[in-house]
Length: 308
Length: 308
Image 1 (tube, rainbow over the protein chains, first blue to last red):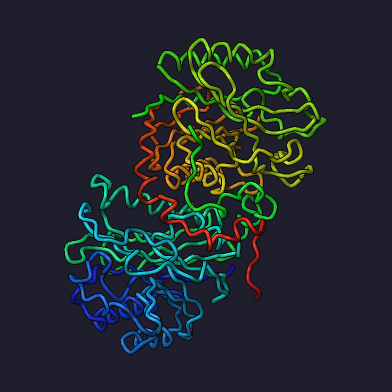
Image 2 (cartoon, rainbow over the protein chains, first blue to last red; image 1 turned 180 degrees about the vertical axis):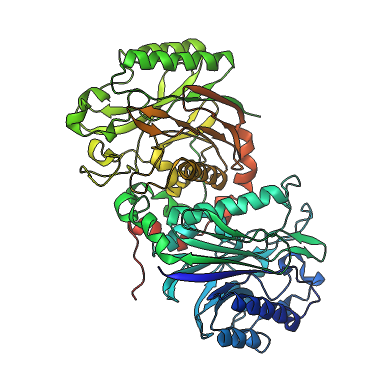
């Protein structure tokens, strides 16, 4: 048994006007709750420090203020300090701006001393580059960020092999498989997912929750790993984000689920040894995968249907 | 609208002693029912002509008699004739033996004239090569077949882009993605899946049905395609196989589901144009995939965890 008590720290909405101090105070309150319950790892959402600003055009939002130039920084240091005091490893997402001015949708992972052991930059940016008047809301992630340049690394941390991905990455089986091929035992991820499809109004909350859960449970099952998926949820300045944070076991079953769209902690005891059976039998990659037939997956980006 | 009325022709058990004539008569009865309902395509299970013989050691089963040396052949010609008479395209699985004596777990696809337009040989063979006394039942697929050598091709048939896979293939996202990268709109597959995991007794029917459905619904959703998954089910000489045949839409929702473990037809109107939205938006591969980070998927077969 290698049990990690995991806390999924779902966050309610962050309004455009809310400052970092207020957000970090909310994160610390969730961390304190997790400490009371004995958690060893707490996972916060994507872009946990700000509103989901890619929904705004630049002139509508003071975009530069949503980026972090260092991590930790003055605003987030109290969170790192509290995590270290509790002896809890954490992961959260934020908008990263490098010294060269490059911008990424990033998440970090710490150990229980508050040291950053891993950084991930979102690879699968959804949405679009230019303002699209036909959408009910904008999703300008491809404008505000460039695609991650770090791949999908994993790290040994707190006795397990951990990996990260962010939001839309969870819908891509490649994300999970690249980590699975590195023996990942726990994938942590955050998301900010609008409750309605901006290009198809009848794809509402129920369908969107289903698609999210389907992607996460299948990724966990097919790679025999745990997954913790944590939402920023609720109404951000009139734009609803779905909740539905879940913790999923290596058989693809949901073992904890958020009930609200607010700040809410979900908790599960996750035995990393529960990954072993799947990795040694039905998903023993070495015995069953047939890479000689997978060539298209890395050889071509788009689909090429057969000629009529 | 490009609607194909699809019939999933689940079959109940086939006992070791049951001959081809009896099996083909059952298949024709299902075909007649599908014709009454106006189906344009009918999908039968994996190894539709015989019992699931890889559960038997050679000396327990008259193995050679379970293979087909040609397709169609005398035993199956009546099925092809009836399909042509009805104007129904069909797909079914069988044990193929080539003139060179090579053995594959194979399925074929016809057009509505009964002409074979596609052949697929199962790539992901589950199970084991040698008799394993620790299992509650044997799963000697790796002994009786060699892995498919045709990849995952697709074909334009009856106005749609169709692909095939077989049973355990459905659990591998690579299967779906390789077809998705060829613009597949409909994946047809059959399976023979024991109701209990031979290596973990408490993984019973409910979990097995969940894993199967999870794999199929996620594959359909993540590639924006229809899927028809058809069981051979019920008790074959004391060995239970699960049912749960389903038809799944390109959003990953089950639109038809078998209720029994016997011969049973499920039907759905499948509009191939319903694939377009997903293929043009969230799963527009050309716009969103990042193959520069997928290298491990084709470069390595087994998992390589990081060093301690």
